[in-house]
Length: 34
Image 1 (tube, rainbow, N blue to C red):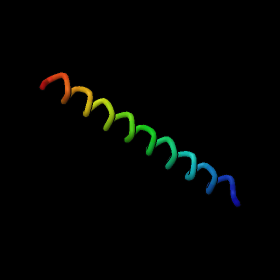
Image 2: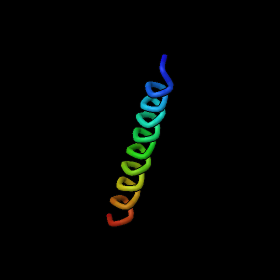
Image 3: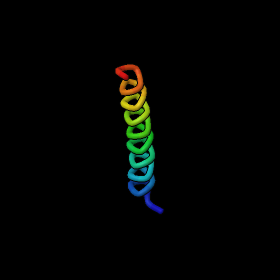
Image 4: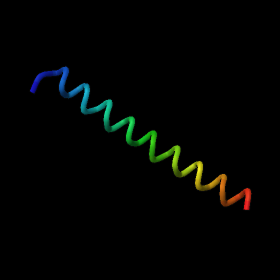
């Protein structure tokens, strides 16, 4: 494995975490609006 591949892998993990946080926040705000 090259360092570049590892870097890309980490970026993917971070982006997926961000997506999860965003979806969680959206669902929470939707519940509050209701």
